[in-house]
Amino acid sequence: MRIKFQPSGVRGDVPAGQTLLEAATALGVEIESVCGGRGTCGKCRVIASGELSGLTDMERRQLSEAERAAGYRLACQASILGDVSVVVPEESRISRVSILSAGVERRVDLEPWVSRRVVSIPKPTLAEPSADLVRLEAVWAKQWPEPLKPTLRALQQLPLAVRAAEGLVTLLCADDEVVRIEPGQGPPRLLGLALDIGTTTVVGYLLDLETGRQLAVSSLLNPQTRYGDDVVSRIEFSQHEGGLATLQREIVAAINHIIEETVALATAAGEGGISADAILAMTVVGNTTMQHLFLGISPAALAQSPYVPAMTAAQCLRAHELGINIYPDAHVWTLPNIAGWVGADTVGVLLATGIYQDQEIGLAIDIGTNGEMALGSQERLITCSTAAGPAFEGAHLSCGMRAADGAIDAVHMNEDVHWHSIGGAPPRGICGSGLVDLVAEMLRVGVINTAGFMGDGEALRNNGQAKLADRLRQIGRQRAFELVSESQGAGGRPVLVTQRDVRELQLAKGAIRAGIEILIKELGIGREDVRRVYLAGAFGNYIRPQSALAIGLIPHFPNAEIIPVGNAAGSGAKMALLSRSCREQAMALIHSVEYLELSARADFQQEFAEAMLF
Ligand code: FES
Image (cartoon, rainbow, N blue to C red):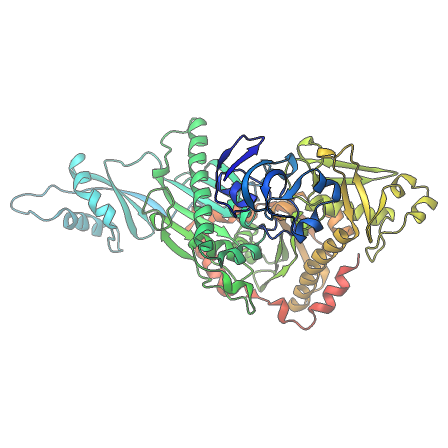
């Protein structure tokens, strides 16, 4: 069947029976699909005409009568029966997400585990015609105690290299393996890539392994998001036929894109000797599911109690085994996972903050769809994870969206509402940090009470806050607060926050707060003992600490400094790339850090119920 997408103009032939979303994916047209095509998020709205299947129940639920009359369909629900034409409106297109790449940098001594060793191999003679490798071994043994371990590729390079520069060769070693042999002094640069695979975004840092300098950074939206926005929907998709292979292929393609881009960026910045082939080492952090998908290992067991991963230990692979386009024998290290829902990204945060070496007690929180937390010091460190739900990432809210252009990310209220939208674009929705700000302000001015209920506006009016009261709406059976009017919103759509959205936030913050309270109890400390609170990740970086305190997301720690640490997981990956000790510390952490399974705690429900209140 012929299909045509506007405004991109992309057209193609697709089989009958495919959904519009499947056809769009096949033809490279990007459409938001937060719920992974289950029909529950309503983000894949398109205007379609032609021969299509009838409206589904999901579409009746998600689309207003006016939208249905205007030809709106959910791309994941409408199947193609004949030739069709599709308009993808602005609000359904995947926009550039603001990706946080910078993170706290703790000083590390450069101690690379990739090295260059220059040796001079004597020429063979008729009297002593020993093999190239034998002569190399003899030279090697005089300088290094460990045995010489060349890869097959390095052996293949040896005879030509040894004869090209009168026996002077450079051995490039990754840990105790010789991965490459080059004539003379070898390549001008030894490069490494540190990679943070987030559920939503992927960030790569290109580093010079001999100076420790960062040469370029590149990031993109994790392409797996088109198969589901959150970890659970990815795990579900991985269980479909071919699903796991698809998700792995997508992430590898994204990494290869990042490699190309970092190389191009560094070259354009005037750096010499940059090529993908000069990348000899890579470290990877990500949550446990992302690590499994990257390695093509089924994460299915992570979704069922007792949430067991296939492996927790760090893995060392060769780039060619994974299809990564760098030097084929480059070592690719995935940092270890602590448990099924506390992954290598948390290990990265621990490395970057140094909390595990500190004498004073610190709390590190990385908030996304899941909240991973670690509390303690060098004496004892406990981690846990809570299913915060997607509210902090802006998903599953009536007007929620990722932190992309047009997302409201900050709100302030006095007699009326003032907001800021990312990129100054007309507002399309609200992201997590905006929602926390909004709810904190709604609570402060009395739009909601401490139980989270929106009033009818009378109290506001009596209080002289008529403009705020005028923003309250009754939509069906629930109240809503109009943050942005139709005339101000992108595409003539208002941005509303409903009673249900506030409830979603309460559930999310309740889960995080309950996790923190249980960690405090388990460690047997008081709030006054905590000296530092590290907020990691994009959400932690952009959230206003006073708003997080106001809604009770984090308790008040009277002696603690609140420190946003940015993409600390990525910083941890860089540290492990530049320092063998850091990498070894990361590997040791999984044996020393305790993991607390909150669902096994009898007091979790009680803590959670209390923490739901504002
Ligand atoms: Fe279609 Fe979510 S409703 S992708």
